[in-house]
Length: 148
Image 1 (cartoon, one colour):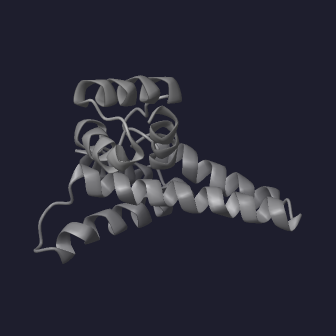
Image 2 (image 1 turned 30 degrees about the horizontal axis):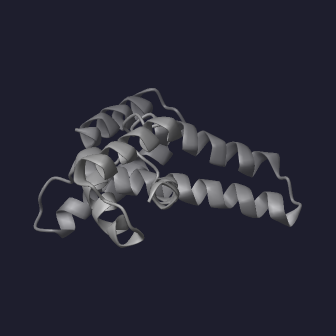
């Protein structure tokens, strides 16, 4: 499970006295395990962990955009956001490229004979059932719109 790898790496970073990585992984790990604890004291699933990790990436990307748009190219903050993204990506499953995603969606559309935009939800549902956590939702939506 992803949460186990996250815990291992967090503990190792603390043992190594890594002043940057240890607190970051501790924060991420705490947020991940809180989900399961708040829902009946169970283990957090990989899908829930992936959702938290993607949220961290989205926040870091937004921070980079805000800094760039403000004209305040503060190198330290941008470097911190890039560091967070790099660390988090280690725990995410391999993401489908746009070409791979397009091929998968085309197969779904063909196999189930979807043909109109009314079928978009059904295509997305089938995609999620087979490849959840391995693609960018916005990109998938764009591809489905293009193919239907």
